[in-house]
Length: 165
Image 1 (cartoon, helix red, strand yellow):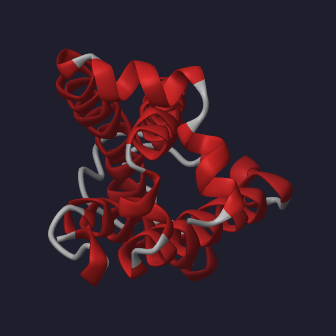
Image 2: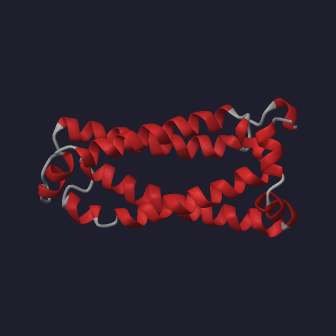
């Protein structure tokens, strides 16, 4: 066992997750709820920018983004619980590597969105307005990355390291 894994398994959090059967199930429920908030709000916003539901101004949908952020934070908290409960399931799993990479790209995409004039352009859009191509590329990247994170999270439970079975 690697030193980091020995440390993880020696923590109170690991003991709490492993010794209480209900913790995993509660965390899964919270994780799915957080994912619903994240994909529901960010996905809806991205789809609007891409041209779906054109009768709604993107700025009106953007007001829902704090709910998506809350969902992401729920997912981070429960993801930490999952990792500490069974570190080998995540640390040696290619699906987790891809999931992390997709989250990193999504995070960089968020920085581009809020760090450039893109956000101001979106807020100025009215109902029925069409986003420019660069803005649509940012929205398409966001939607693709978050769906990829969702898929990788689901795949994590099916593709475990060979020694895990």
